[in-house]
Structures are given as C-alpha cells and as structure tokens.
Amino acid sequence: MRIRLTVLSLLFLAANASRAAGAASPIPVKVVVVAMYEAGEDAGDTPGEYQYWVERAHLDHVLPFDAGFHHLRINDQGVLAVLTGVGTAKAAASIMALGLDPRFDLTHAYWLVAGIAGGDPADVSLGSAVWVHWVVDGDLGYEIDAREIPSGWPTGYVPLRKSTPYEQPVTPPDGQVYELNSSLADWAYGLTKNVPLPDTETMQTKRSHFEEAAAKRAPFVTEGDDLSASTFWHGKLMDDWANAWVRYYTGGKGNFVVSGMEDTGTLQSLAFLSRAGKVDLRRVLVLRTVSNYDQPPRGLTAAESLAEQKVGRYGAYLPALEAAYAVGRPVVDAIVNHWDRYRDHLPSDK
Image 1: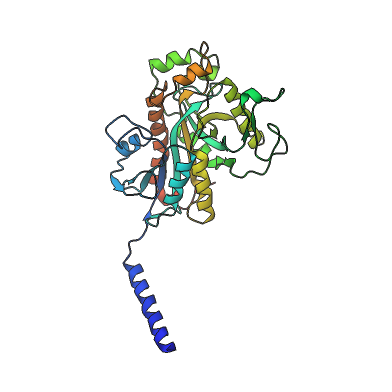
Image 2 (image 1 turned 135 degrees about the horizontal axis):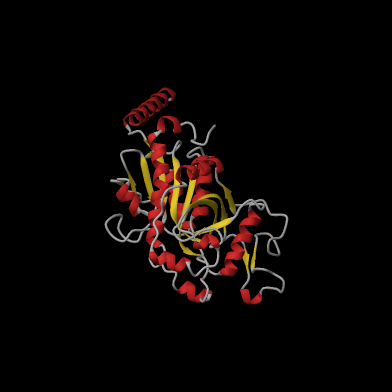
C-alpha cells in the first residue's frame, strides 16, 4: 500500500511539473498607469482619464479582467493600464485584483496614478499638475451635522478614537495617511516641471474671479499633497478643514493642494501587496491635475458653485486630462527607455 501511495505521489508531482513547464511565464510589467474614471468607450469619444493613455500610448492589447472594474490594456513596451472605477472601494478592489493576477510580474513595476482633482486656489490654478508626497484619507473619522457643532469647534469632523477635532496626540494611523517616496516624486517633478500645459479663455475667466495669487496663474507643474475622500465636498470652510486635516495627520509636514477620491483605496491595496512581495511601494507615483477649484469664486455661494461641479462641466475638465497625460507621459517614457537601469535601481537612487 505504501509503495502504491509513493508511486501515485510521484506521478502527481511529475504531472504538476510538466504542467508548470508548459505554462506561459508572467508578463513583466514596467509601468502600471492607474486611471479612475472614463466617460464612455476606451477610445474615440468624449475622454475620461483612461482614453488619452489608450490612444496615445498605443495600449492596443485588451486583456479581460473580470475580477476588476474594467478590462486591462497593455502595449508592446510593457506599459499596462487599469481603470479602477470611481471611489475608494472600487479602486482598492481593482488594484488588489490586479496585484494578485498571476498573468503579470509586477515586482519591478512602477505605478503612476494619473487623474483629475479639485484644487486649493491658495496653491494651484486650473489645469495645473501636482506630484503628490502625502495622501491623507478624508473619510475615516467621526462626523456630526454642522447644525450641531459645539461652540468653539472649527469643524464637525473628529479623528477616529478622539473626542474633539484635531485632538492630540495623533492616533497611530490605520490607513488615514500614506507617505509616498518623496525622492521619486521629486525626480518626476524635476523631469516635468517645465512641461507646457494647456490654457483656455474659459480657464482665464474663471481664474479672474479668485483673489489668490496661485489661482490667477497660468497652469503649472508643482508638488503638494492630496486629500482622498469618496465624498465630493466643496466650499471655503471645507477647504479650511482639508488643510487642517492634512496638517494633523502629517504632523505639520503636509500641505493640502488637491482633492481626489480613490487614492487611499489604491494605496491601501498596494501597501498590502508590497507586504506580500507582489509590488514595490517605493515605486508609486500619484499625479493629480486640477479640473476645478474646491470652493466658489467671489459672488457665488458654496451651494451655487457645487451645482456647477458636474463631471465634464468642470472649468478645466479637458485641459486637466491633457495635463495628466502631458506630465505623466515623460515619466513613463523615461522609465521604459532606461529600463536596463531602472528595473533594479530607482531613478532617484544616488
């Protein structure tokens, strides 16, 4: 009986070895471009964050991706694009599914999250592009209705496990804040800081209604920090909260500049995948471009301004999409063209 079991075991191992030898090797990926929103088809109609990459980076090969939000696309240079869907939940699920997909070797891949955002007029103008250092979650916390905020409280938002806004000491983070590789972000900024960005008469008109010096500038490339929340918030008081929330969770090191939706979901999955040895968290870049201001211009209430904030109707919707591609593409090209060096060594390594 023992001899029979041994023979069966050997046959099983031999069959598995034969099957493994005949299996296709995982596709080595150099760069993953992460988009969140698409207006319609992948190409040929009104664009979202995915379309310019599909059309211009020649992401011609479609790969089914039933475990994620949308099919994947890849080109012959090893650039893979994923469309996560809107919100932190879809982003987290789609990125985790991609990271565990056996078709791909992502151990050396760089990740470029490239999407549009609201912008703080104290720091940026419409159409500007921001390389992110800190991503802070704007959803995890307690909240009471604004009509019941105690006298003396600056906001109705309270950090998890605290009793008052911005209570010290800060609780050790549990997904509330992610610090990206600042050296890599600095490298990307240095490579792209002089990239010309599109401007329009509409953007110029909207800029003229703001008093802040940064808001009046033509679009530019800069660095800053990102508040990620699935709630689309709007208004000067909300902007004050966002600035204080980012300072709180970064120990005063961060400066809120842009508001995105999905980035903490993406980063949570990448953090888990990095811990499992599937990806390298040091190779993650977040680029957000300003499609709209996060508060009203003079003469409008927050409610009136919010009513105008519809996807596709933002004051710099198409220019912001153009900026995301124009600024992101040189970084992707640099990584691909110098893959012999950047596969094993980060561009920011000394």
